Amino acid sequence: MTRGAAVDKLAARLQAASEFMREHDDFLVVSHVQPDGDAVSSTLAVGWMLAQLGKTYTMINEGRLPAKFSYLPNYERVLSFTEQAPSRLFRHVISVDCADYARIGKVSELFAEGAKLLNIDHHPTNDGFGACQLIVPDASATVEILYDLAVQMGFALDTDFGRCIYTGLLTDTGGFRYASVGPKVMQIAADLLKLGVNGHELAEAALEKMTVPQMKLLQKGLSTLRFSDDRKIAWVHISLEDMAAIQAESEDMDGLVNYPRNVEGVLVGLMFKQRGPLSWKISLRSNTVNVAEIAQKFGGGGHIRAAGCTVEGELQEVTERVVREVGSMLT
Ligand code: 5GP
Ligand code: MN
Image 1 (tube, rainbow, N blue to C red):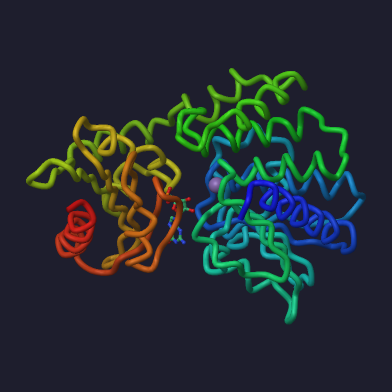
Image 2: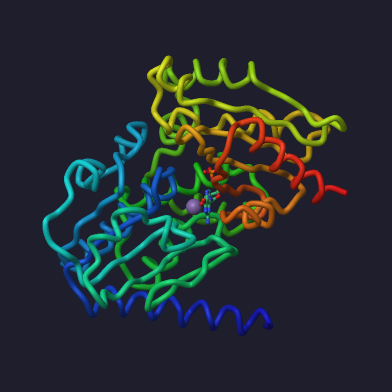
């Protein structure tokens, strides 16, 4: 596709998404299980846009949102399905930052039969579920797409919306450091700062601050650091027992996988997080290798440089299988 055709296609997709929002009402806004900064921010940004249109909407996630994002406007309005599931079904759904239907988790139980779903996402592995799709793999974060959508829809942007967009950009680009950051991301960030968003304060809250359990998990996780013989693969693990001993939440593990990846000479960093007696959620990170391809071999997905999957088995067996697969990608 030529660049001009790609731009036209994006314009048409933005238009279709905008019509979806304008034409319907009583929306359910959902994001992925174990939501990250982009998922939380995108949920709230869509809520903000629907409020501008005078629509009614319910924002929900399968679990509770990470407490670190409680500074975001309307954070407390996002329901936890596990604790506060609404007792009725919804006919219009907007899903943000979900690469596939399963990532929505149990929240999908609230979709009415034949419900219409708008799928807004930036994962290249998105499988295109839903009646209407706004999938932009070039976008650094789902919030980047939502910023374009809000501009296209002609909303008067304010700092409530701006804080959501800026937070999603910060968390999905590692503080504007990843390869996904180009002039466009910096331009949006600059526009948001001009709008009055306090970038320093948001970076402090979303990236710098660590909870005590997060620090203890880092300590524990680093003590498990192992390398492949050629030192090109490094990994850490956190067991359920560790989580219980530290009284940590899942969100406290955020960022830990970057340590094995950042070791000099390492091409792929892995983190094994225990989810059940024989179930391990694996985070894959690289600066050079397509880890989404590896994650897909285990039924997961994600981005080229950051992906995830779940593998069943004992830790040692799971580690060996995954490390062997990564190793075969490196040769
Ligand atoms: P994380 O390692 O932070 O959980 O996830 C890294 C990236 O991979 C995220 O963009 C996330 O959306 C994606 N990802 C993580 N786990 C899965 C999974 O099980 N399936 C799919 N499709 N994507 C995943
Ligand atoms: Mn994202």
